[in-house]
Length: 305
Image (cartoon, rainbow, N blue to C red; front, side, top):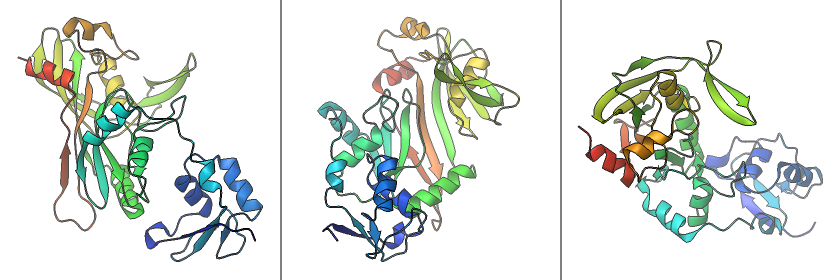
């Protein structure tokens, strides 16, 4: 058999299917290529052919072709200023996880015409990291707390916390008009509209719950602290707009020009994931992470009544 490289499966990697392991490890390898390599026996486990559904065991030796790394080495260059910006945006780091203050305008991952996102940039910054995976998502236009797992066991634990609603999520949102806020529980559904995926209020959609609390105002706008009990796509944006108070700078669901009237330096969405709080299994106390808003958003906050 041709020479190759052998990867030893650690305890933290056990339990997942070989196809999923390969797709996560070699991020830019097409799915069809992974199945081709498995079918032709170019990827083997303990020197034997294997099927995609095989579940890895700690200590397994996975043989991969010698040129596999070359296949995935071509990644679109990331501008140096973006890399440096993300490097400074790490607000917490432990053996289990990273918390990043995601910049507004940067996607969490590549795809849909984007060559890279936060996770690809982190992997490029930290080439020796064996495991870096997104725990959750933020809209491209939204800034703030984003959690990245550094261990598979941590990723599983955090996914369970998110699924069970055991994560306290707090946002800052500047909305149009004077609003007293309160509970918003419109059900939401994703649809395609003019080739674009959007979210609408629909009684047949998924249950969604947000709480808006006013904490300041400026002119015809109100700053809200928003706590969400569910994590639907564009939830805060659609709940605010459907209540008659769209988020300032929201070009998809609201009137973006309000942002220009408020502050000439504000071009983007005034929505920031301010804090996250959760308790990892085995920990006595919850962990709380806070990310400061972008500079232009902070100037607005400083000018509030």
